[in-house]
Each structure stands twice: as structure tokens, then as C-alpha cells.
Length: 333
Image 1 (spheres, helix red, strand yellow):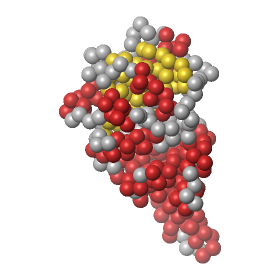
Image 2 (cartoon, helix red, strand yellow):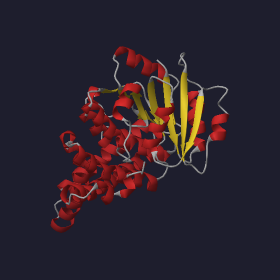
Image 3 (cartoon, helix red, strand yellow):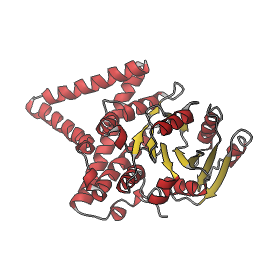
Image 4 (cartoon, one colour):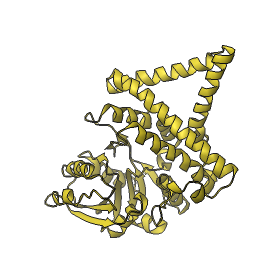
């Protein structure tokens, strides 16, 4: 089986350098190819790619900007492999990654898989705090993972595998972003394909490097979810409402405490934030990252929760067309 690694990139040559350097250290013994798709960047990475041509089998394509989903589709159309593996450009790949994927597919073949992500010691404190917020069992990362069966997993496109057959049947990613990965997973299920989590096939994912970018990202995640719920109502889950309920509950807790001097609910929030701090401090071995993790989780819940509420009102209550309500979530193909 020939793996084709599909990597869309937009103005991130330094990240591509780190990603390709990690791929040059892969211990996988079989051939694999890398397809870099430059999505209309003004800071191109072609020079970086050329530095690795003597160590890796790489194809490089430049195209007009049309978003990550369409760029992944473009890369899969150009690829030669039987199985596509999709990475974000801000990932660093462990040496045994392809070996773990190969073992997983040999043991239980599926047409689509997803893997988790972790943080490297070299990541900044903010990146580690954001990683905690996005992956911890105490946050929506843990709730999302716990609410999805391993064999009914919705892969995320920073670390995702897709067979050529599944790609051709589904036509790949849609033009919504973010939200294109759960959209694809659900369409694959509807077509009869299976998805699965490969727990050992993890990547190191840098995610966003500052608070403003992180807040904007999770806000878009929140806006995308009611759109997906409107498209695929039978896959709706109560856990999708959790960040919004969390934010509303916090406002109610403050009101009860300040107006009626009833602070039991506020105390529960304090216990939760204390648990976040202690867990992150232990995992990261840093009090600073523990404190930053509280900020990261708050930004995650607030950004996602307010985005979800806005989208729920416009899409579910007012029945607005998603492309008109939130044009910033849709790329033109």
C-alpha cells in the first residue's frame, strides 16, 4: 500500500520546514510520497520543499486560494497512493507514525481513520496550555472523545487518513471551514464507510500560537456546529451544547452570588477551575502552564459557546441559509 501524505499550506514556510524535517526521520521502510499544496500563499514554501527533495519523494503544487478542504481534495487528485494521510502544516510527525498506521490498517482495515495529538516539550507555554484545553478529559476535548466510540470516530483533518475509494465515492471535503472534517465523516458513514480512532498514531500539533488566533478559531468551531446539526440532525448530541451552557451557567452563578448572596454554583465553578489548574500543572510540570490552561479553557468555552449560540439562533431558530448567515465559513470552489 502506497501512502500519499497530503499537506495544504498557506503562508507557513517555517512550519513546513519543521514538518518535512520530522518526516525525513520516519522509520517506515516502505515507499511513501508527500504532496504539498500551496493554497495561494504570498510566502511560498517551494524553496523549503526543494531542500528536502534528495531525502523525500515530494510533489509541490501552487494553486489559487480556495481553502484547506479544496486544497486537500486537489492534493488527493494529484497523488499516486492507495491511501491518503492528511496533515496540517503545523504538525510534527513522530518517527513511528506510519508504522503505527500501517499496523492499524493491517489489523483492522478502515477507509477512514483519525489520530490524536500531543504537545512537544519545545512548544511555547501558551501552545501547551491550548493543547491541554483542546485535549483534556476535563474539557470538550475529553467530552468529545468520550462521547464518540472508537469505531465511530470523527477524524480531525490535522491527522486523518482516507482511502482512495472513500475519497472518490465522497468527493472529499466540502467548502465549509471549519467543520469540513465532521462533515466528511458523516457523509462517509452515510455511504457505508467506517471510521476509526488509531490511538497510537498521534502527531505533535502546534495549533494556534497566540490567544487572539485561538479565540477566533474556536469561535468559528462554535458557529459551524449548528450548521452541521441542521444538515445532519440525527448526529446531533447534547454535548455540543456544553460550552454554551457552561458560559450561561457562569453568568447565572455571578448573578446569584452578587444579588442574592447565593454562591454555591459559583463555588462549583471554582472547584472546576481548580481541577483544571491542578491537572494541567501535574501533566505539564509547570505552575505557569497550569494558570495559562485556565485561561485557555475559558477562551475555548467562551469562544465556542458564544459562536454556537449565535449560529443556533440564526440557523436553527431563524432558519437562515448558512452561506448567507456566515459567509466567512465558506470558501468558493
